[in-house]
Amino acid sequence: MTGMDDPYKTLGVSKTATADEIRKAYRKLAKELHPDSNPGNAAAEERFKHVSQAFKLLSDPDKRAEYDAAARAGFHPGMGGMGGAAGGKPFNFRQSRQAGRGGFEDIFSDLFTDFGAQGGARRQQQAPRKGADMRQSLTVDFMEAAHGGKHRVSLAGGRTLDVAVPSGASDGQVLRLRGQGEPSASGGQPGDALIEIRVAEHKYFSRAGDDVRLELPISVKEAALGAKVRAPTIDGPVDVRVPPGSSTGTLLRLRGKGFAGAKGKRGDQLIRLMVALPPSDEALKAFLETWSPPDGYDPRKGLRS
Image (cartoon, rainbow, N blue to C red; front, side, top):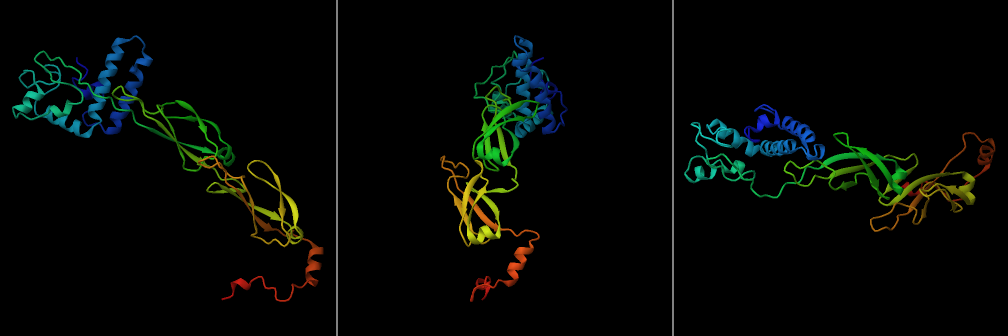
């Protein structure tokens, strides 16, 4: 039997098989027959070539349709090599096209050259196609996105890869790992693995571009009189100066404490002060009952139309 007598039989699928069924059958056979899994086994290597040829034909909707049409017209595989007429006479695609007998040469133009009376065939020299890319997602926490790190990712088929997450990685960023995708059906280079980064939310940090945002609670006394307070950053805690007379919403900027940018320059950390009152403070209540704001002070002045 020649490897392409019947591509459906070669892959072990029916003539009504879906594209997904054909793809699954090919992957299973390619894994079993690949030369790397069968070193020195010439028979397995030859069958792997035939399986790859069959998949290349049947995975192309146009070529598959033309092949099926040729078979229905009476040019059955297995008669005189790859194509024979109903009477058993060897069929040459190129000659039939020139004679106006159907023109099915295009079906196999990228697989084979002419088939002669002896049924022999020569491989047409053609650059092999690259394998398909594989896509996978990887979720990392906020700090890992900030500083980078390594993760192990499981791919389809049971393979695992160690992925280096760069510092400053952003949500939705795609890392391309060349040569780690699907094998080529025609002996070409394998495809790539595309790893999409997903960054988990942090309990108090958030990100805006390369800047890190933080809401920092402060007391009434710290807001009114000013103070030096401890604040977290992605590099560890630091002391920050709260200006006297600060209100909720006052912004402080820590330069260079954000995420690494595309050119290596880091963003900033923006701290939004939030005045927090204790749940119960009788002394504060007593003080405020006797306190009056300065004349002309109206905290809602800016809301008047």
